[in-house]
Image (tube, rainbow, N blue to C red):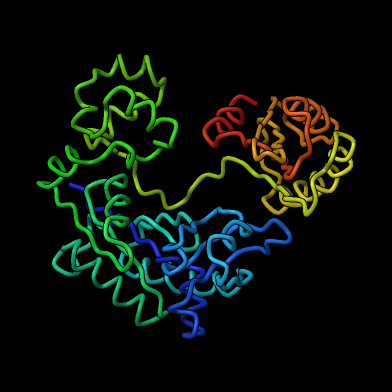
Length: 348
């Protein structure tokens, strides 16, 4: 039986700022861009969340919800330094660590013999050491799979520690609301509710074929998660699937011509980023457009080179889907999977 931990720093960017300035601890605090430049909330502390503020919310809206909100611009250099200490702590416990972001990681502790092999004691040690060494509080979930461990880490936030033992998996899942399953967004949740599927117990009553018919490939995932099936390993090295850049503009780009003018700097930034990644093999190109009504569209096409002319054609097609002012433009590439690259090399 596998033992997987999911460790997640509580409101990480805000936590670092509150650690360095205790006066910020008990007041609503958000980290992110300025409302005047269409910034968004990167994270916020729990006093701010009490006002309904959350990550990815436009900062202007956050300020309306909480006029006395304190906003700080992010200091990513400082956050990366704190993250390095926390990631080093994870690696003291096990080499099987899969970082997901600066503040989050999976750990496979199945073969760890310290703490008498107890995942609960390991989770407590991580929490204690992270706080002692960095001043940052982390929530930890322990379970037999990645899916359940991530659920567990969110279960009792902030400063949570939740363990789902093997003999607790079944009753836990039966009562679990389907809206908490990974990948179930508002649209899928509404569709499930319309079918009177509220819990995983309800979901289990549907055969695989019916779920696939109604939800496509995601129907199989729903079938598996409702039964706790998640064999994904903790991956020490994560394969990059795409490289992209995007910009949110201080003022809307009013027409297609303005978007075309803004495209060249984006392509230049993308090329620089690809060079830093060693010029990886490209499979597809894509352009992302977000209009001033916050609707978004992405258009992609096959291609092995990040050519400006190809992005230009994709932009024309993407803009035609809305034909209205644009607040965000992005360009990027999908990378050729490693297995496919090896196969291509084999037959060269």
